[in-house]
Amino acid sequence: MNIFLNFTIYQIGWFLAVFKENTGAAIALPLLVVHLYFSKHKKADLKMMGLLLFAGLIIDGTLHAIGCLQFNVLAFPIPLWLAIIWLLLATLPHHSLNWLKGRPVLSSVFGAIGGPLAYWAGVRVGAAGFGWDTIWALAVISLIWAVLWPLVMHFANRVLPK
Image 1 (tube, rainbow, N blue to C red):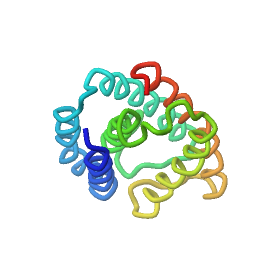
Image 2: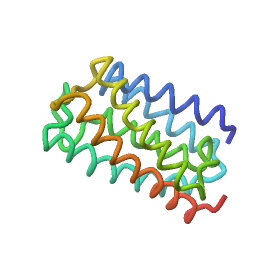
Image 3: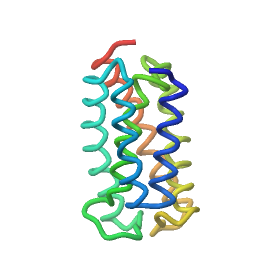
């Protein structure tokens, strides 16, 4: 799959899900099918989708349960739109983020910056809210993603070596 197409699918899906929440997620869902249709690594991508959906349910479900994240739509443990974002995120490790495989320090920095930026953007457009002071919420999310993303990339490298 072309890395530009992969990144574009992710971005369009992210914007649909964040700006239109569950309605946007339903519209974004076919983008996952398009990705899988064009992917040369369908099996590896599906494994990543399972892993990251599970991680998202645990991580964002916990952040919601402890009051760090608040959602506009009722859902347990997370809203559909956020689950779709986790599935879309899972399409990146074997394609547009393949260059992070085998680079745990860089993956950690990427996660520590990119993770909280995505949450902050979602909060800024009104898809969710922070139940804690913004700085504390972002610090906790940054720490989580600094640990999570190198693990994700390690798993991706084991599923489909670079």
